[in-house]
Image (cartoon, rainbow, N blue to C red; front, side):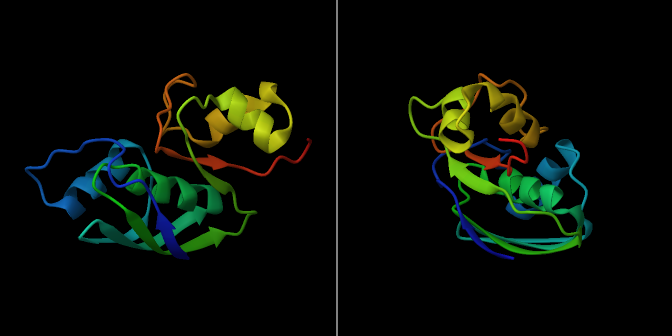
Length: 144
């Protein structure tokens, strides 16, 4: 639980004809992310999310799905997690970054970029399509 900051002017553009909270709920559904007793409140670029998820990985993906939306500057995480796991590091993509470069920095091995790609699915569809300001999960690496 806590407050996670994002680049407000970067991210996916959602349908602005709908209420922000409804739009964000639709985004979670589109990504296939499940939250029991889902509650979302959005005001002035801050999203508060409550409910229960199955794992730490699901929690982090929900936070990223909401925060990587244009106009969202912070996500106030109030989610419960059923299965406790080690937390991932959140990394904000900079201009010139690639998953290989990020992998080299965090894991010491550029060839482990697929671990980062897989950890961010379904949010990432292609390992070559990341953008500055996007926030990614960098999971712990068990076998560096």
